Image 1: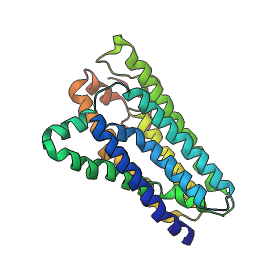
Image 2: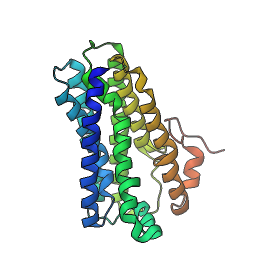
Image 3: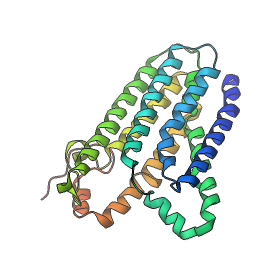
Image 4: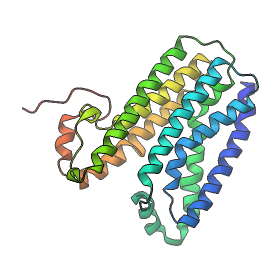
Length: 260
């Protein structure tokens, strides 16, 4: 625990510095959406910092560094490609229009610093695992299995959605094939599995106390910025989405309901 405490302050300062620089860039670009791309990169930054400050490394240290880097870089690259040349996300546009001149500082505290804080809290299982010297055990295997299953759902779900949207004939339609046939949010479900996987690895390292980290991530995915927010928007603008809801599992994959 003492080694973990020695990591906390440097990582917190690095995240504050990174999000402040990113905020400054957003002012020049007049686009807050760049913060979404940083989400995955922030965890890579944390795991990398933890690794290099931990000194002696265990097999678990390398495992978590590799897994978190794969996850973070994939997500950042996907969002970069998706957002390239696009206007600012409607969430930030609405906030900008509502608060006017106050948006500059409001975005600093409620978007950038808040994201840095969330990354710090949610990444605690990564920090615990990287600093651990405990021998690998069954929980590491379970956590790694959960991670790769989650990465599959997340990456394949994103790829299927991206391919679907590129076809002009699908404009205004609902994707109900592939993984999207079994869950309305395969990418969010995948994210859910990834972070519980990281927790299981932390549990193997004696970090059972970090349970609140995947719990917070799960709450965000289900109730705040993930499923809840997206479905509210899709119900209002996508024809046929209500029918899709009636037959498709909201989160955990399950066979579609048959129409009577």
